[in-house]
Amino acid sequence: MSEFWVPLAVSLLLVILFESDILPVGWESAYGSKEFFIAVAMELITICAIPLALRLFKFQRVHRELTDDPENREKNLLKWGSYRLGLLCLPLFLNTLFYYMFMNVAFGYMGIILALCLFFVYPSLRRCNDETASR
Image 1 (cartoon, rainbow, N blue to C red):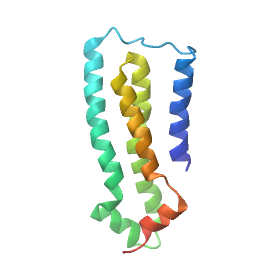
Image 2: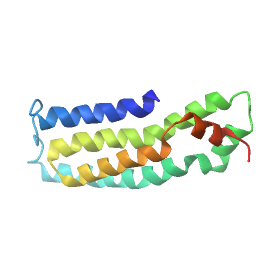
Image 3: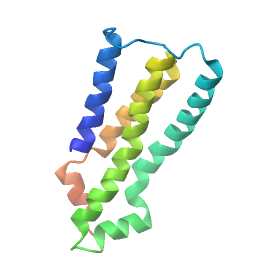
């Protein structure tokens, strides 16, 4: 649960710090080519990370690790759940930071989309039990 809530809280803290002018806004906005390359990279990362994170537990290898080995289910669930949350949380944090660095709304939109996607993989106890149950 901490892997879910801490990145959201840190991103929200960044928003609060930048919006209240405690941290400077747009300090990299003069560098157009750097902004372009970072935007393209973050768009590709975001476009690839979302479907991968949402479908990660459906992949045959991952599903087998989560369901076939009862002794290591909890360890495997922690490992793959951490990967899945990392696929969404790291780009979320970076998009939030880049939005305020460049003041480019594309980063803001990608951050919002990633934040919304996080709730589709919310690590509740019921979801954890469902994802480790044999089918």
